Amino acid sequence: MKGEFSRDSFDRLQHFRRVLMQQGKVQLDADWNEQVSILLHYIQTLATDIIGPYAGPVSGCGFMIEAKGKDFQIGPGRYYVDGVLCENEKAIKYTDQLHQPRIPTRDTDYIVYLDVWERHITKLEDDGIPEKALDGPDTATRAKTVWQVKVKELTPPYAFSYCAGGAELLDNEIAISKACLRARAKGDPQQVEPCLVEPEARYRGTENQLYRVEVHDGGRVTDRPTFKWSRENGSVAFPIKGIKSDGTDTFTVDLENLGRDERFGLAVNDWVEIENDDSVLNNMANPLLQVQKVDRFEMTVTLKTKPGVSFNLGDATHALLRRWDQKKGVSDMGVVAITESESNPPVGWLELEDGIKIQFKTDGTYRTGDYWLIPARTTSGDVEWPGEELQGEPTPKFLPPRGVMHHLAPLAIISVSKETVKLVHDCRCTFKPLSYSCAYSYYGRLGIGVDLLCPE
Image (cartoon, rainbow, N blue to C red; front, side, top):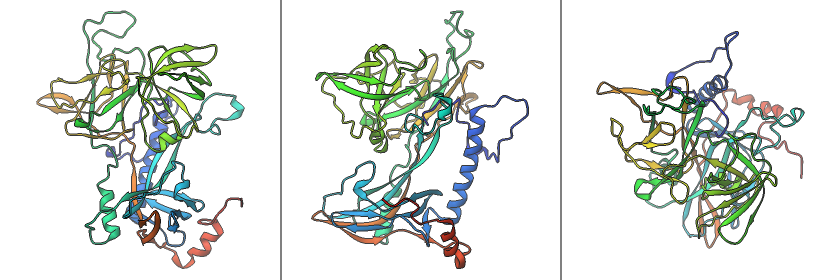
C-alpha cells in the first residue's frame, strides 16, 4: 500500500470488533482503514471456515481450464481462495492475461494454479478515481483483488493423486517472505541544533513519517538480498509521459509533474525506480536509477544507471517514476545489502536516518516486494513498534512483513507434449448453497455467474 497514510493500525491479534467514532474528536485515516480491515478480516475468515481454503459455487464455478491446441482457456465464473472472491467475467486464453505469460515448452505435466493478491490502486494507475469536479485534488485510493493463472512444473512422486501433489507443491511456495524485521530509534546526545526536537529524543526527524522498508532483490542471505526504503511509504511517484535514451548510460524521462512541493519532489542524487503494470504484475524490481539533473521548466529528469545494466520496461501502461530515500550504505546500484543479526543490546543494526534503525532476523528467506511499515513520531521521539521484555530490558519484537500476501489454489493438471496442451485433471472444488433447491433461479434473477458485458 504505497499511499499517504499515517500508519496501518490493524492487528488481528488484538481481536478488535469495531472502531467507534467519537463526537468532537480528530478523525484520522488509520481509524477508518482499520474498521475496513476488521470487517474484511471477519468476512474472509468466515468464508474460509465455511467454504474451505478454495472452492467455487456449484452453479457458477469459474476458472475451468480447457485445452485449446497450444494454449488453454480460463473459464468465466467465481472462485474463492482463502475467503477472497475471484471473479472472471468472460473466458480468456492463458496467454492473453495482462502479464503476458508463455506456455511452457518442456514435455511434462504441470500444475495450473490461481495466484491471488491485493494491489493498491491510486489515481496514477486509474484516472477514474479522482472526482473530476474537484479539478485535480487527490482523495481516497482503492485496493483491488488481482488474480493470475500460472503454471508450475509438476514432478513425481505425487502425494495421493495428481491434484494432491500439486496442492502439496503449492504449499511449499513462499506466500510471504519467511523473514522478520524489528525497528527502533536511538537518541543522540550530541544533537543540539535548535530546529530539531529535544536532544534526548531518539527519533530526530522534524516530521511524522511512515517509513517503508521493502525487499528489492530476494533470496537468502547467501544470495545477497537487498532492500530499499522510503520515508513517505513509497508514495512519491510521478507519471511518465515518455523515456529517451542517449545510447549510453543515461535516460531522459518526461514527467507529467515534479511533485507538489520539495518534500514530495525530486532532487539530484535521489534514487528512483521505473515501474508499470507489467513489472508490478510480474513482481519485478527494476534496477534503480540515480537522478543527475532536474529540469523544472521542461518537466524532465536525467537518470543515470550503472554501465552495462539494462532492463525491459515491457508494457508501458501506467509507467511511473517512484522515489526511494536511502542514502547511507547504498551500493552502486542504489540498494542496501540485507545483513542479519539478533543481538541485544543493539549491535549490527542498520541505520536508515534520524536515529531510526532496523535489524533483520537470522535465517530469513526474502521475497521481492514484501515490506514493513515503521511509523515515526516527533511527540515521542520514537517509532511505534511492539516490544517485549528480554533480560529486564524493553526490546522491539521481530515482525513478519505486512505483505504482499499471495493466496494460491490448484485449478488443473495439464500435460504438454510437442507444445500441445492436454487437460489431465480438473482440480477445482465446488460447494452447494444452503438453499440449493432454489439457487439456480435465484442466481438467474441476480445475474450472478452470467456474462453481463455488452457483446463485442
